[in-house]
Length: 265
Image (cartoon, rainbow, N blue to C red; front, top):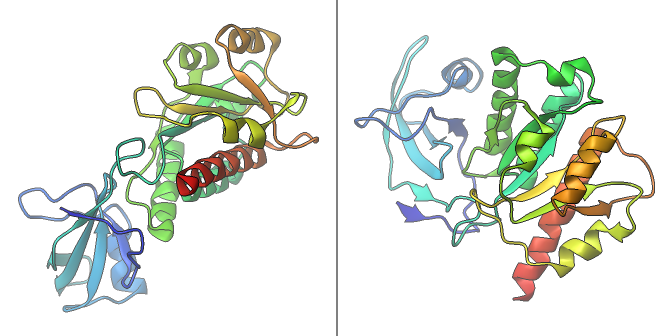
């Protein structure tokens, strides 16, 4: 696989694949073929890029198309990108740990977190979370994954973030991490100043974690667990932010701090 250059441009449409080709056959995610045929009206000879979600971008050309089928062949060598946190990757492995906001706010949040470079999203079942934030379901998870795939195509990323099942706070706290940043409007330390001053190295085994509380804030027992684990409490703004606003702004600051350090070096 050819390494991906940072200045590679999207000259053709991107489509989500179910993964790397199996026995030379490319399979598209649900809805992609219909979009290609009915909306974009792709036909034999048209070119596209298939994203396998695990770091590969595959140049493809349409060999045949029908009412519901799209057959493609390779159209050159695939390009690749290192996984978040690995050598040569654009960003470290960053996880956002937060209860999901209500309704379509969750999908909008996932869309923007993917654009910003999140490697994983860990939905939390907090003590003060609203019932919808605790509700699990395959349909909801699929909607979030579909949103993530669309953001992947739009942003030019090559790695589809992990979207985990809902977990209690304690089980996530117990996992190892490189650094834990807890966003709290009452904190004394500035998120920007703190993130710019520490070593930002995160891998899938020891991620950088950004914690965002529910609308009512974390419960005292949860805050005590954070304190015992040595979390860094940081302030983004002097006001109370919505879940999605805090998650997106916090991730943007963290990514900006990483970018500033990387460029200076």
